Length: 358
Image 1 (cartoon, rainbow, N blue to C red):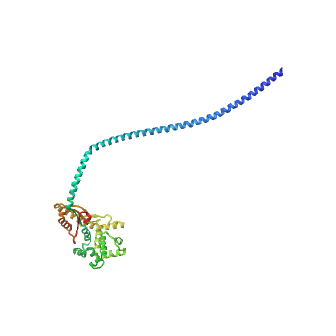
Image 2: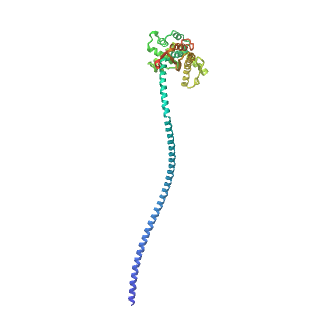
Image 3: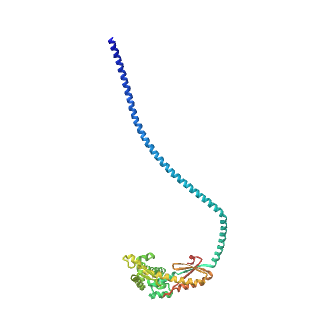
């Protein structure tokens, strides 16, 4: 009985051990599952954190977009209001234009009628008027020579005889008879006559003529030898300017030269050229303005008009019936505007336009 009891207990113990092993296995499985769940829970928490952050950022972006959309919406509303006002203004303008359409038609008819009258009047004017161009070029250029050579008897004599001053100069400079002066020699002498006053150099003269620099220098030297008073005039003008700081025209108008005593040779040379040139150009301006004032007074007896001054010439709108008398009057007043030791000569040209009058 004891053995049977013990055997039964042994069987029970084996059975219990087997059950215990089974329970341990189950516990291990449960623990493994719990471990996997914990890992998943960690991943879920991380995902939740990331997702929450993304949601917060998205909410911020949405909030910014809403603000921008609100501003845009307000701007759009303002623009819509502005467009509405513009549309209203346009409608009013269209209405006004429509109301004035008849007025425009009437004005158009009046304009057409006026244009016809103006054309007819213009035709009448053109039949009675012509442009009279008084070319004062020779007067101005001769004046520029006169001021320079007041004491040069030979050149004064050439002027008084009515000789071609450029041909006369060429004859003396090139040592040929007056009638043997070539066209080229006259042209070169003319260039020197007008260039000397501007302080023309051999280089400058060679650029204005077909002479080379050596030939140009020889021509300038010959010119000074022919007219020695010219150098004296230039020296006196420069000395006067250095001493007084200015030069004067024949009527006493002054041109101040602040750089005449400059230490810079280039600046000083320019002032020296102005000391020689300013009295000549200024005196020419004096003379033509005297002529203009006298002619203006005389024009009170004419229907013609003085239009403008173009450098060394005067332009007039002249009535054809007055053309001859007007030409004589203007020529006389210009030639007698100022008394010099040599005569002033005025050329006259007429035509229906400025180009034709030349």
